[in-house]
Image (cartoon, rainbow, N blue to C red):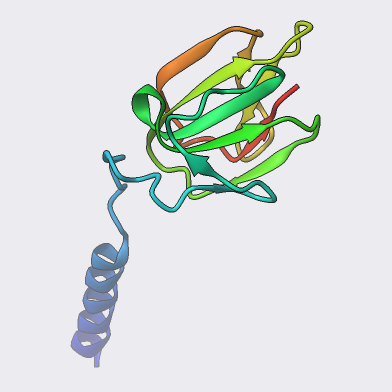
Length: 128
């Protein structure tokens, strides 16, 4: 009986160890399914219009582009890798990228940009 209990415990420990997934590393295509709730994307290559905070799913302003204008906080979905952003706001408006607890990851002054930003910890964005 003790042997059976010991074996059951050993099996349970082995299953638990195998069932824990390893952390995923961000790859070049990890933002392929990325979205921003309520905002349609446009193909990369479009200029970031004045007064907008823009995000791209790829580095160096490639992939799909999201142009954010309205001053509110948007939910980001499936941003798991490297992309890029540009704050083309006017009047000193700052763009914010926030984590899951709405802590500021990026506080971007107008005119700033990042051609290779890892969006993995980003959950929300506020364009003003």
